[in-house]
Image (cartoon, rainbow over all chains, first blue to last red; front, side):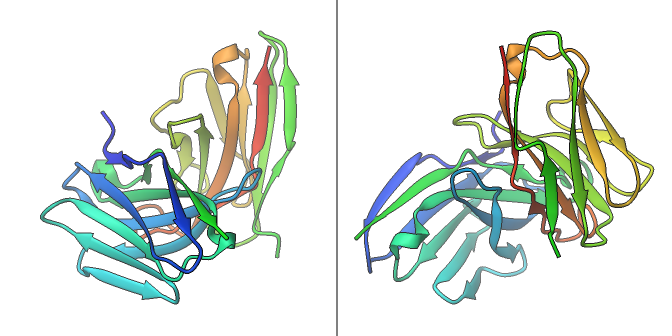
Length: 113
Length: 114
């Protein structure tokens, strides 16, 4: 049973517009959430994170929103750029048996010029 | 400062052959991890080492062994490779497991088992 789900395998967005990537989780033990970006033939690189004590974290063009009651987080990229085209993975961790990172299956974002 | 390095980048094995994937980090991190990535399945944890001298199974440990050689190095061994182990393998490291932890990844090893 997938504890972290990214239900959209792919997303296409026009350059300059907003990209919204979504992630849902089921494990109530998760209290730390991350987004990673992955280019082909490279390892994932850390993008942004959020702790469960916050509902929003911003870093430049990237903002992550956390809705704990809905067990949902989203990554907003504004404005989107062609260089943002990559696979984005959502990941979560917590305490005890949930302390390892659990990853979603990824969303391929394509930003069209 | 190279971060996390992995060798080899590519490998082709025949069923039943063995090999060791090497990983090293220069960030003085305590924890290290091995993942595999398969299409449509994200990254799945094979084994991890919370600190030097300890190793533990992750989600998909069968068919693999690991060695935490020292604080810098964490190797993954396939004793008898099977086609189901065809995958991309990533090593990662972090300061400390489970403490609002951010993991940093190597570039990956693409393994094909025929």
